[in-house]
Length: 350
Image 1 (cartoon, one colour):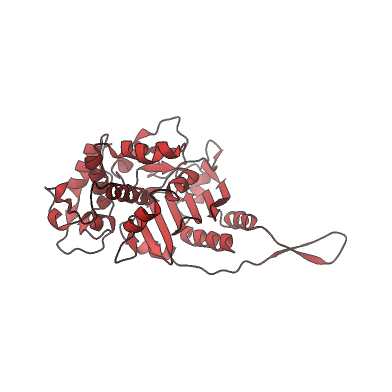
Image 2 (cartoon, rainbow, N blue to C red; image 1 turned 30 degrees about the horizontal axis):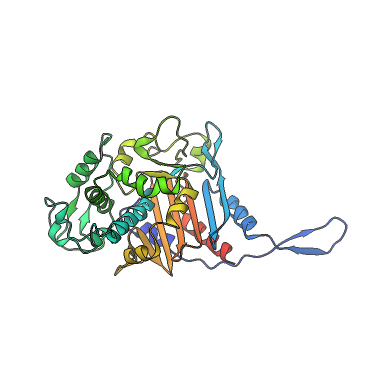
């Protein structure tokens, strides 16, 4: 979950890679025959070649082509990643917060052009900052992602921490920060009179019957989720990353609306492919840049990107939300995750 878009630019590079056929020889004849491997088989082989550690979901024309785990969720306990394993989705949560804002706009509770002074009168320049600018990261607000030094138990304490740590620049320009989306979560709570987690449950989790979705503050010893590993070597040595859960609970507690949610890949696709409705989504995606409502916009794709500690996540989805790729990874040195996601997209669309 980086503060600048530089890491993301590399992930957005579209790779056009031709996929060759595979051949085999039969024992009783020297004639080679060309085998047309299915796209699913090609995807599985490619992920194994890349030593991918995580979960991959590939959807084409509303049908799941692949939903599978690779490697380990917990190497020490020999628990493998499966389609049901939950991962921190990091900044991809911003797309969900943005979608909840779109729903509130459709219900007439707020407007995109509404100044946030209505919700944060104590915040500098709040009369000049709109909800749309928070959504598009053009509010001028800046805040580093740091451990608060304690576990922030309540939403009030989470918001107070953000308000105490952020700064506001006089010049309003694109500046990627979690703070914009924490403030949006606070706005949602004010207009619905519900905590963000309660609103998420009412609007999304309960209607969609999400069964592998958790807020970081609600994790228990019985909750199944992936541990984060700095590298393949550390995974095999059971060396968990410093910013892996549950040890990084303090950091996660500071990411209200911006990165404190864990989901399985299938649960994430359930949300991304259905919520909000199409007209609300289009109203959310209005922007003068390549970022809007938590999504990066590129070549008619909606792209979600997340990174925190040893966890990384990628979402690629067409704007009709019929096809997509989700990768949730718990191995930090998987630096080519964007390249992998683009490759899976290319294979699945052939």
